[in-house]
Length: 203
Image 1 (cartoon, rainbow, N blue to C red):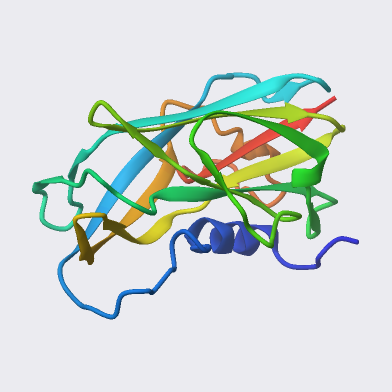
Image 2: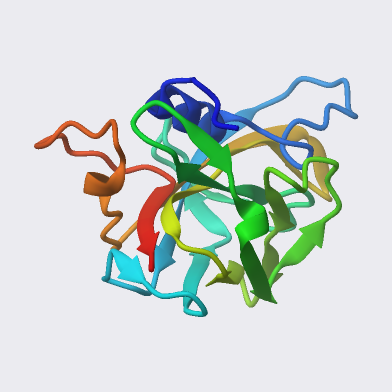
């Protein structure tokens, strides 16, 4: 049954929300905090795919990152809990949606799946560190027809194995990707948006 919540508000909540990997407050210490940006790409320019097709999502960013606030390049290798929660919504009319991860199969090529009690609403992953890069690659296979929005959550309170007090927030947005915002029922034509959300139709 659809949830009568404005879709754009729900999407923003998912994007900004931090799940278990992001909000684990095991360490009660205060120190520096950084803010970084990571880019994820979808290797499809089409807004419509067919049942059985696979959408590939990939992230590859260096471990030396520019802090948004100071502009300084920070070496942030060895992150222990850097990742994202991936959620998929199916649009049911203008003001209603259903969580739809169960309508897809997932093929993880690079990353680690995290056990999460909310598996009916999201899939949670940790990124891997390889050759001074953070990497992630996920195939999403369509099993049912509909209009969908896929969302990558941001990551908060990320810490390194060598420094558990210095936390970092990571904004995860799409880059070099047509996100097909016209498929969002609440999209206002002419508005420029860049976020961690991607829209597509399955036929």
